[in-house]
Image 1 (spheres, rainbow, N blue to C red):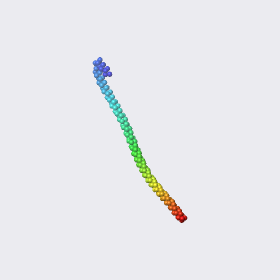
Image 2: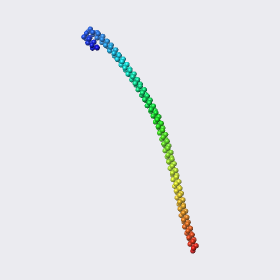
Image 3: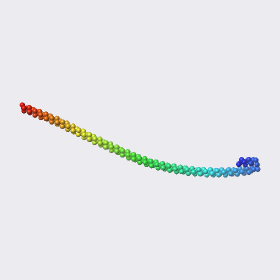
Image 4: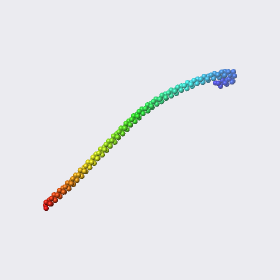
Length: 161
């Protein structure tokens, strides 16, 4: 439009004043449009910033909720782990106690077995000693019988003569 006005002003000098006035009007119109565009842009930027702020706030709240949930889960897991450790410690102590009891019982059984073995050996020794004494007495008795027979034979043979 400005170009048309400029062409008209050049070809028709009496319209030059009109052209200069229309330039001022055009400038005012352009300034008004620029002001409207700046206001619209400013409004749009404010709207986008507010929407972004709302989204950011929602994301922060969501992240906070997730963090609280993770912390709660971590606390629960720590509690469960502590309970498991406590159970494992108790189990370990009980296992050690049972092992100690078994070892004690094993030692007691070994002592009983050694004592019983010792008693058996003692009885065997006594039996052998008794058997040896019996054999000695039997041998002595046989010797006495032989001696007795010899004396009887000697008496009989001396009496027969």
